[in-house]
Amino acid sequence: MTQRPSPADDLARWTTVDRYYEDALAPEDPVLEETLRTSHAAGLPEIQVSPLQGRLLHLLARAVGARRILEVGTLGGYSAIWLGRALPPDGRLLSLELEPRHAEVARANLARAGLAERAEVRVGPAAESLTALRRASTPAFDVVFIDADKVGYPEYLEGAIALSRRGTLIVADNVVRRGDVADASSSDAQVQGVRRMNERIAHDPRLFATAIQTVGSKGYDGFSAALVVADP
Ligand code: SAH
Ligand code: DHB
Ligand code: MG
Image (cartoon, rainbow, N blue to C red; front, side):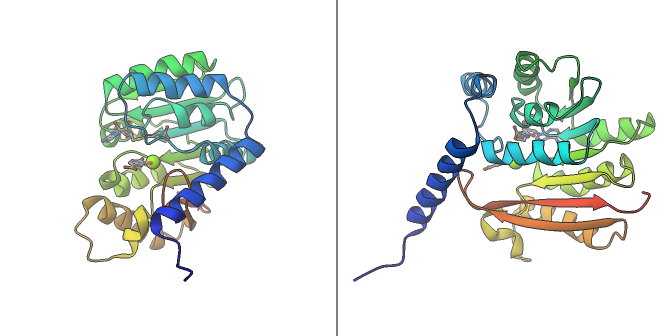
């Protein structure tokens, strides 16, 4: 009797396709491989975006001609390198990270990627760093990537909008969480954080947004993207 593939079969299949596309589209990248090695050696959680997702972030930043990029949640610098590589030589990447140990690993990796001059990792709770950036009248960012603790997403969205201009692209990771995001009564604070961010997006006429579900080496999750279509 033929059976429906089990969830484990599905995951194996999606991961196989991720590997296929990585082989087909992504050449060897010693800097990124070293980034993953040093992150692992330092005991950082292995929750960075996948190689293909990193390429999507890079592609989006290049497509919008980003010169100033803000990241919320650095980890070991994997996504930061993909984003930083999209910048022109005089571009700037600022990445916000709570854990000094993560920031230290990320700085070394960004330097190895040749991005030391363009990239800065700022340590502290992202909400506080965002408030400080707003107070300092920081020039608008062209791309913001939100990927820190999910409970903070509504606040990070608010900060991102305040640091945006018309045309800024705001991308958020982990907005599906195995489908849990659709459960209004979820007791998971992270799920509720994502849902509250989505409510703010929906009620903000300055934003045009979508969400894409993803499967593959990071399981079942998703990205959202919001474009600032009016002066914030
Ligand atoms: N963007 C990274 C992955 C980030 S993982 C990549 O794809 O390579 C999430 C990161 O957010 C972790 O490093 C975690 O320490 C950090 N983080 C958690 N809470 C935070 C907070 N309140 N402020 C800033 N960073 C936070
Ligand atoms: C996890 C994945 C992420 O991309 C992230 O930013 C945080 C946590 C996870 O799989 O637990
Ligand atoms: Mg993430």
